[in-house]
Amino acid sequence: MTAVFSLVRWLGKYAPLRGLAALTGVLALAACEPMAFTGAAPSAPRVDPGTPVQVALLVPSGAGDAGRNVLAESLENAARLAARDLSGVRIDLRVYSTAGNPQLAAQAAARAADEGAQIILGPVFGSEARPAGEAVAARGINVLSFSNDISVAGGNVFVLGLTFENTARRLLNYAASQGRGQVMIVAERTPSGRAAIDAVRMAAPGTGASVVAVETFEFSQQGVVEALPRISETARGSGADTILFSSGNDGALPLLAQLLPDNRVGPPRFQYMGLTRWDIPPASLQQRGLQGGWFAKPDPALAAQFEDRYRAAYGASPHPIAGLAYDGIAAVGALISTGRGDALSRASLTQGSGFAGVNGVFRLLPNGRNQRGLAVATIRDNQVVILDRAPRSFVGPGF
Image (cartoon, rainbow, N blue to C red; front, side):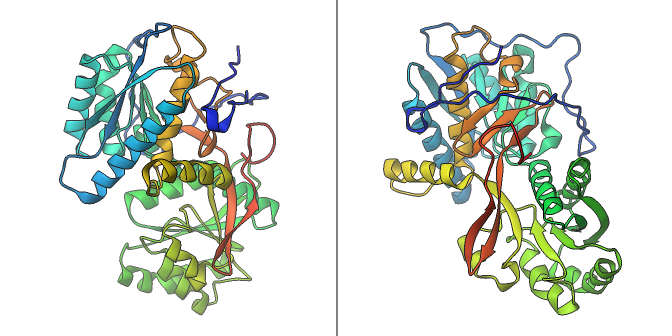
């Protein structure tokens, strides 16, 4: 039966997200296989009505890394904000440091289970998620990682992060609808670049778009410069009308977007789009080469509401992925509010109606991955402009 989820007070109600398509099997992006149980999977810890549910939050603090400590604090703040906002549900939130280390993440997960955790949120990094999941798999405890690395998904591990697969499908659908469906991928020769290529190829069927060419480059400034003639020649001879970049603003994207037009591979003949957030950091909006390009992002109206509430509570802006911790707590609370003893089981977590969170609608899939509703945006006059709004349900266009 499809459940109607109650969201936190400031968002009103979790709307039931109905009219679902059947879920289909999806191939793994990486060589390592998802975790699999031998025999029947262990039952998840039971939820007792009226008793606080113990949730473990695994954060990357404890290594003396200032950036990771800021991220950890932001995730904890967001989780506590969500727990306070829940109505009629009591969460016993306990925080464990992993230092971003796989071995320490496994130890933290095991300790949390020993201390009574019924579900785990985090850790952040994909390298931590699998060891953490393995440490508690025999106890039936599910792990909702903040990672976007789908190679670690499966068994009792779910990824909450925005994946290349989600973004690629959204952008390819939109590109095809705009008559720009002949796509060339330009990716760096790194594990992330290879995962991006696989994700786009996997997402393309059914979108109306086609991958007509792929070019890669060594991940360095010299590598980009040396690859430019080959990338440009392939683009002009492949029939592509869209160039899809895997790199972000912290990688090769600014250089590619600056130099390719000088090699006659730029607008208006070629539409640029990317798998990363082009509006992060905000200074990126000033880049001339990114003007008019397409990228995907979570529902900006809902994200702005969350950011305003976070700033009001803590006097600072949240980390860009802090909303995942809020969504995780809110989803757990919504499931618990059903009053079912198996509220934290795989079947409950993966029911197709999904959730409406501060990043928009999302649902967890049986293979440990997720689907998220995303908006398509562009940069115009150094400002973000929404071209196609994020869907608010899993019915209709946008997926």
